[in-house]
Length: 239
Image (cartoon, rainbow, N blue to C red; front, side):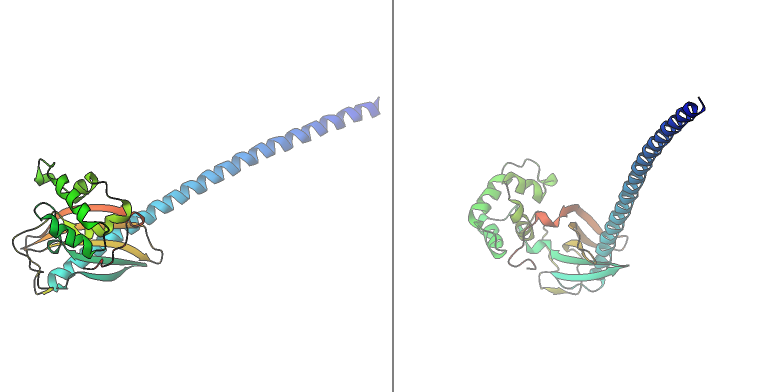
């Protein structure tokens, strides 16, 4: 009887051990899942912080470059690099008034500007752009993107075409001579992209008119963000 009781107790002890192992395994699975969730959340927080830092770096680089242009414009177009903390930002500056204005330019001028940038089929594309602008009812709200979307522009053509064309213009271009003492009255676009220590795919583009008014020295005309991977490369991107 004693021996049988011992066997019963041993069996019960064995069942209890198996149950305890099962509970421990379940708890371990839950803990691992919770750890994975915590790590995933921490990774997302780190990514958000990194994106915010990069976004701030792009804004700061554009602001610094614009301030520098206001004091000593030099030659435009230009490409400069600025180091902000541990990020290197490349800023490209272009003169909007040196581009063909698609609101008023003749097809031949648009085609010539496209050809200079290496765009294929410039004559046909210029004709499509002129046809597209005829469908616009209100030029005051027109953007270059709106017109180019109407002509079904391919992603690999985008950079070259937008570097050749504009919807901005005025009767006076202070940057027409290439190197100016003042850019008051000028219309410039600044494109900023982080190139080091890790190249970013995001390009921030902002277009300004320089008023020359101390109270409001610049007026922003456009601000947009695009992916560099969606843009092509031009034969003469700096021109």
